[in-house]
Length: 205
Image (cartoon, rainbow, N blue to C red; front, top):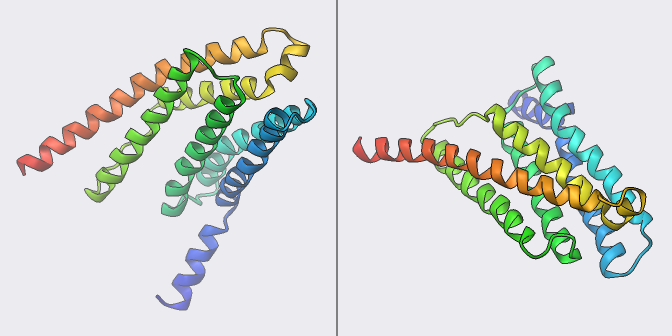
């Protein structure tokens, strides 16, 4: 690799869209730490509002990184690889922490399990199809699924602190979590069907 190529790769890796994605990943331990300190270590409730604020900021970068990458023509293979990873890390970490917190419990755990299993399934399919140089585009419904998922987690992170302001905050969060789980199953099946189609074609070739 020559110097020009190295500089070009470094420049793309440090573009604003990728920096926003890095920020989303960096927000994860802060959000998880705040909920852990409040719930497990019996810290003050304002820590939940700190977690919600940082989470909202991280969720907004999920839109902004793609937006700036498109309008500034800064799309890169590195960004396309890292962006969904950052999303999955953020969602999975928050769901696991909320389960440990007890906000997600009982039957609602199944909604979280469905979401996590779908993410693993789609990641595996994408990795396999990438080896075949087959691209699986993100559908509009999948984007709506992500939006509902992030809103649900935001409500659940507020938890008890939110319930003191509006008593149904946690219940709204759990309802939205189930809605996102239903969308998750539908979009996951869509990806799975597409993956199976390419698998059959590969076996027949």
